[in-house]
Structure formats: structure tokens, C-alpha cells
Image (cartoon, rainbow, N blue to C red; front, side, top):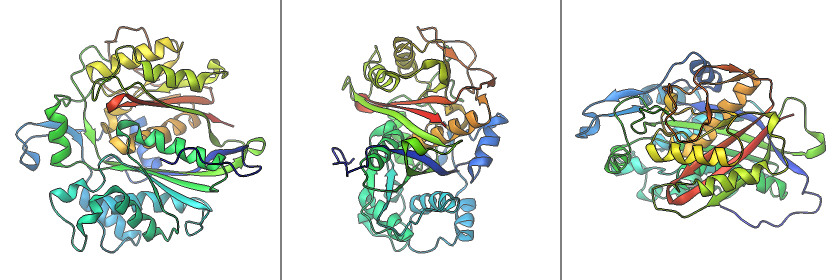
Length: 393
């Protein structure tokens, strides 16, 4: 990440405003398709037994690769790309075509959020693709070059919070006056390496995940690419109906390499920062990480309660997509914006009975809201935590 960027004169009042978005997932190749699927209660999760020769069954949302490649053909995406790179380009191009952004301008930046990148190359190398593309920076440069963007892309790879961190970095760079537009693409695709890694941690379940529920048994994983394009707009000239990043925070409590702090320290501190001086009665909901593991959900409930948000509706979208890793923070932010636009709080699929120690308000059925803001929070390995307060003008 780029930190400590010097501000240009007159740039401090620039705000990051979302002007376009896209989601490519097992539930569809557009944001609209994905949102409608979630509204209807559909899930991309399926149980796989013997997939990739793995000895243990698992539940995941795997995308149909042939359908993705066919869609890439329609979008004119051709050349020596890995499947990971094609899917990223598909999402970015679908978002770019919704707005006026000039991807070839030196005032436009690409930020790629991913935790694994082209790790699938360990299983099968793509034709004409060199081993250097296993490096995240090389994969990002390939995507940026295909778009015709002249800038060196930024890669954010910070475990589960990558997608939220990438959006925070976009807002910082816009506020600093470095760029007029920032394209944030979050993407990860599953492979035997990834699934077996999570299985070795005993974190996966072969049943549909149940965030915050008393009978939760672990996480599911999923394929997805999601893109948000941000534009710098003067704070006093925000157009009506637009979404802006109001406040953001990244906090690392460094509690453990894989286990979260029991007191949710880093997550609480991130929430406290984004809520400082902001009215809580305008918050429609908190979109939590909600992985459905025993410790993550408990930690988040403590952090939410400590931050004074126990009465605010809380939801998790993992029951529809599984944990999409580097895409999660972007995908879930997009769907949360669409939900508020629609005047609803999306339900937490799989949740029935509260199974955490703090009495937080987990949403089990779709609810109406007339509020215009929400909080997106994420936590990840190594004690990393992040939160963003989004508000609609």
C-alpha cells in the first residue's frame, strides 16, 4: 500500500465517490444479477466431494469457468492471460463501460486486491504465460497493461481485509490529489492449494455456513471478482444519490497469526475511529465479516457491542458467496450500497439462533430501512482489521 502520500495544494477536500461497479460470481456477471439473486435468497454454494482429488468434501461457490470464458469472448478479452486475469479484466471492463473514466489516463489508477493471485498456476500453467505471473505485481501489471493504463498498479494483499484496505487506499490517494479516478478490483479464485490450506486449519465445513448462529461449524469459500470505480469529487459538490467513503480505519492488534483477539481489540478500534463524531442513528446496518467460524463471529460480536452498535442491524453475506477472500470487501460493499438504495437490510443466510456472547442484532429476514449509511467491517489473519463508513448523499 502507498502510505504517507503528500497532498497537493487544494486537494484535501476531495472525496472518493463510487461511480460504477460490477460483480462477477457464480450468481451472475453483473451487479444487478447478483443483487437480485441475493434478494431472492439464492446461494452459489454447493457441496463438492472428490473435487480436484482432495480427500475431504467441502462446500464452496465455484464459478463455471466455461461460462466466464464465453463472456470474456463477448467482451473482446483475448490474449495470453490466466483465468484469474481474464476474470479480473471481465469485471473491470464491465464497470468501466458504465462511466466516463479514461483508463488510459495517467490520472487513473488500478488497485488490485487479492490474497492469492495466480496461485492456480501451481496446478496448471496457462499457455504462453511465464512463471513470473505468479508474482502479484506481475499479474497486476498485466491487467493494467491490457487496459492501456500507463501507471504502475497498486496491489493490496492483506489477508481477508484486502478489499476494504484497497478502497481505503483509493480514498487516500484521491484525497491527496494523486489521481482523479481509482479502479478497485478485488478478485480471488479457488484451487486445491487454497482449499486444502483452509482444511488444514480445520476452518472449513462441508455444510452451508451459518454466520453468528449457535450451530455454526466453519466457513465456506467462493470464487468472485468485484470492481468499484471511485472518482474524486469536492466534498461540497457531491451529487445527490451518490455513495462516498466518509471515514475509514485500519487497525492491527497482532494478537495471533490466525486466531482473532477475544476482545476484538483491533476491530473495535477500527469501528471506534470511523464512528468518531458520526451520528449512529443514520446507520442502516453493519455489514460484518461474518465468516461463521467459532472465534471470528464471537470476536466481531464483542467489537460491535463495545462500539455501541448492539442495537444496529448486523448482517453477513457469506451464506450466498462463501468467503471470497480478496474480493470479499469489494463485493460486499457493492451489495450493501445496492441494498440501501433499495431501502432494505439483506438477511444473513443460514442464521437462526444467536450463538455469540454479545446480544447483537443479527438480521435473519429482510428488513426495511430508510437510513443512508452503513459500516463495512473486515478482519483477517495476523490480527488485521479494517472498517469503512459509507454514506449516500
